[in-house]
Length: 103
Image (cartoon, rainbow, N blue to C red; front, side, top):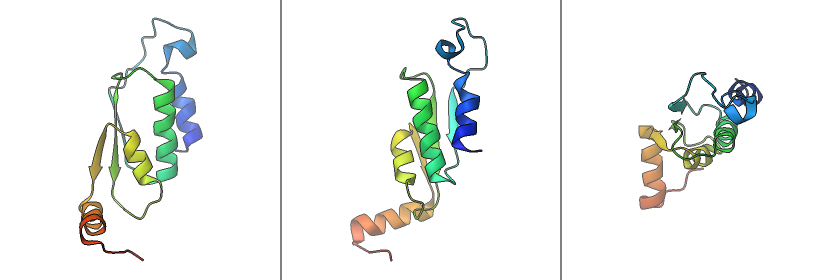
């Protein structure tokens, strides 16, 4: 799914947008992103945060598996819950605590 498709499908979740104050549609409580495409994931999370500016409306989680994916940390910072792979944790530990440089 592209970010554009996601925005089209989730835009109707907001009662203020669809003009129905008593919107009875499905209410997502937890939205999870696999984080395979970091740019799309970041755009989708940003869209949800802008569409639903009320804190506590729902939780967003993201899974970070590959530390080489650009913008994944940006997506992680926008999420409420982040699941890191063992590879990500190992690489992060080496970078921060051991000073290893990845080429």
